[in-house]
Length: 476
Image (cartoon, rainbow, N blue to C red):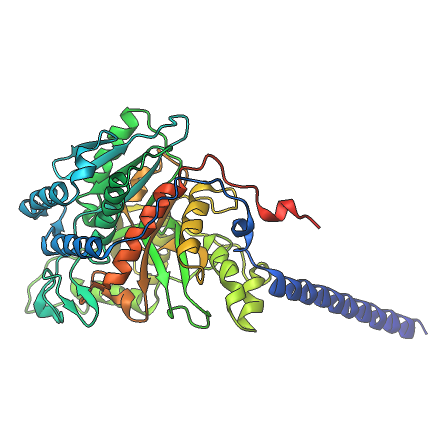
């Protein structure tokens, strides 16, 4: 009887465990279902009452349209190439300086704008605001471009700015002269229309971003730090509007970079005893090194997905997916572990992958991922950028993201805690390959939109405070 009772107790215990697990599963499914059909993180400030700003019309006349496109094309034709940290086309950089002064005369002559040349070729513009108690912000862009050779397969010469099939072709059209020219063109139009900002701001144009910004951005930051400048936020290049690129997503999405990936340059070397070529060893130093590189290619870095901004990206986009992806992306708390990675971990991973003590591994240079900028409903910079986008493109879904490249903005972390990486450049399938690749291009319409975006952004930044989030006004 004792054995029978024990067996019964075990069975009853297992039933209770199974019932408990079933109950937990039902609760998780219920919570998940509720989140799936109610999660809409983009609703927030769209329904709130915003302060009124100057609201100068962004209408661009036919004549202005012709001029702004001509200015943009002229900028593309100047080959401001950075070949390396020690080799740049300095004559082209000087020519670009003259172009800016010629096509933006109001910017360079206005009493509201102070212009300084930094490190010979970079530019710093200080725009005074009428209310100095408002913390200023800063827009960044870079003048230099990576090399381009027509023989690589360009449909139009890379420094021709030729219009072909509805696009302007040329190196720098999307990286990053569209922002250089778009920012200054927008400011030129605003000043011509009598605009006087309430909140002051800065514009920084680096000349060596493609080779790490050591002379341009670094010296601009030193200058601002010497003056005790603190910034509300910084907006640089980085992510864009993705249309048809994210599989399963309905409609275009604007991803605003709130961090950048880290970087590591690693040196692999093998040293062996010297010997005569007539009696080669079974394994040569070149063979050992080649095998190490092959193992790294066969076992690439793992793709880690955690609870950082990459999770927020999909939560912001979740409502634009169909089931079952919508369920998964609305409930990443249930489907992903908390993971993070740093530069030293990358070196350790390389060592474990190569697994050959004859291969010496040295970290030549590197830095950890950048701090994560805020993207809540009370994050001034993020919400101003978001509002500007949604006013122009109400069909967009706006989400935070991680910038996979590194920008000049990484040098500005001492001046602000909020750095955003975005320009309203529209990318369709195949366009991402144009970055640093062949057939870089931008449509005239998209460039006009870019000018209009900065035109509105300057004005939207003049508010004192963000409105109270809509949800907090209507709590259940």
